[in-house]
Length: 301
Image (tube, rainbow, N blue to C red):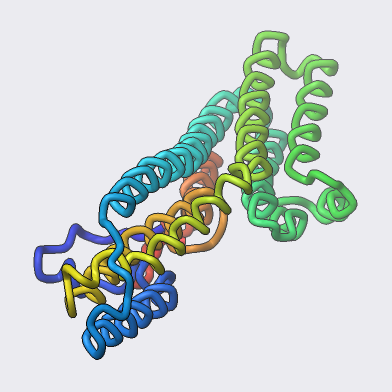
């Protein structure tokens, strides 16, 4: 995720890091080259190109803007919902660390470290990485080895948490009220995982995305024909501005649609996991805490 101060008026046009421009620059160049070629033909031999009425372009551009805005709103809703779920995970991990203080020191430490393993395993699963390997530093060797064969390591860790709490209840080390409260925290973590998996595995309908991609390209490629007679050599400039806007919004929607990736506008799962790690380890009484992750070249991972 890009983290930087709001630029001033002059720096606004010079910023490269965090801009969608690098992603859409090839399409912009192709579109502008077409506009330059058509403008050159019209200047070389006036009347060679048919004069297209501007009304259809205005209506098509208006309709496309509405549909593009709807798609970007839907993509941002996915991104914001994912951020809220990870914010809820921060709350649940802190609360679990606080509520588990009634347990014995060794049991509590094992549960809290397994909770950190769950956070890192969930982050890895959502990004398609090795969840068992991400959880291994927080588990003992036997439990880490048992996790390798699991098809859902994050859920397996929550089940193991529940099993250990149930054993503590049967042995009389905690009462039913404490057990219920801690299990409620585990249930909330499971809800966060299910919500993130829903976002991860339910993309926007492909046909809808494909329609917008095609319409954006067709509109920008045909735009010079509609304005070349009126705009002259300003046609390439106007076409480039429109292409930057439409292609940029389209590309930004693609990034926001998958919020758990590693692109510049995706969620900083590593930084959020580090916040949880610091808080939970401090609750365990540890002092050698890692520092929070900071943006590197304006990018917070």
